[in-house]
Length: 105
Image (tube, rainbow, N blue to C red; front, side, top):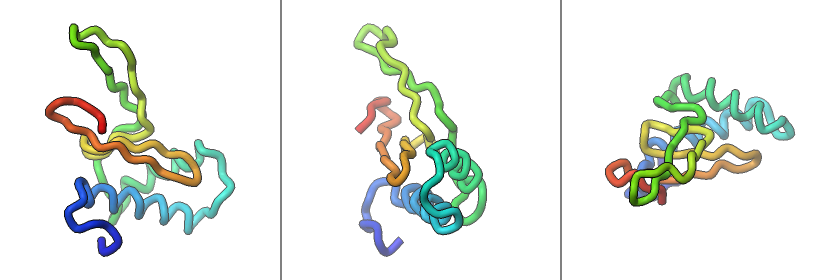
């Protein structure tokens, strides 16, 4: 993990996600459809050393102050219940999840 900041939040998960994406790119190269990379990540994240628990496209409800659902967010992956990941070739976007307040940062 030498390339990541030592005190970065969720560095262990981020390291595995980035590693899996790099392994897919090294193995298959560029130029595939986005759906290909989604499927490849779902498989790669089940294999050591990248193995993590994840959900594919979970429904995450965003509620207003009354508890009414105003939007259903569907990220590509929710990893270890702590990191939301949007896969888009040639990049990966991460969003941290504050599980106590259920807010996205």
